[in-house]
Length: 81
Image (cartoon, rainbow, N blue to C red; front, side, top):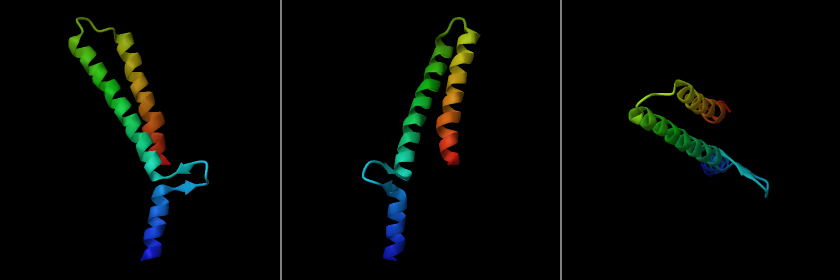
């Protein structure tokens, strides 16, 4: 039982070579920060759409493309690893 729990703890904390510790908690923290950035970006876009008298479609497409790129590079890529 102890060995199983110890293995799970090491798996969660990851590898620590004295210089860098990489594990699930690091990846989850990175994803949370990125998720919050994405949420903020999308909230900003929604506010701009709600308050805009006229929509600049080029501007909106570029903002949505940036959100999609962030999603693909930071969330999807890390989940697949």
